[in-house]
Length: 179
Image (cartoon, rainbow, N blue to C red; front, side):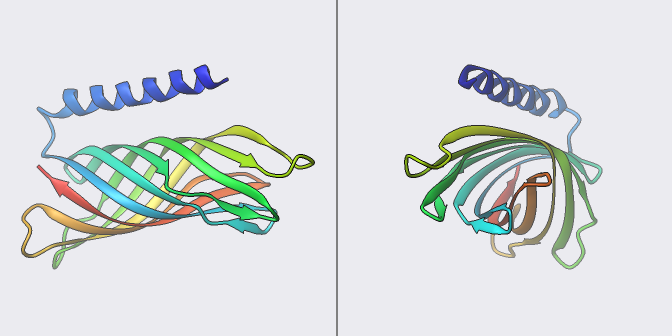
């Protein structure tokens, strides 16, 4: 099962790299970003809040961007002595960008994310590493930094996975640099 996840992860990263290099000649703006994310894992109205770091790379053309995102866990959180850790998440997104007005821009991201969640606890409880893959979306607002050319600060909300029993979301704060 871990080999399957590794294959999916490598495939997603290679596709995003190919996308970045092939669209580079047509793209107005390639960019990279790093975000701190306060995650929220909601299981049956109980919440764990692990923190994550996101690395984003994309290309933008005519206010539409294609973005690859890789999240890694900074720490885990617990619910009733069970540790919940969103170890990693890989996603590919289409980002619809508004026009920049007075230094601000609004983005809507639609895509697919592959999430790896590890649950560990006492011997009598559920202990496992599971994959939750599916539709992902997000919204963010970005503001240009006046003294740093091509750099924006970004505040966003992201939904990485949702079904009837589990929801994985996060609030992010980070920086984006456009080349």
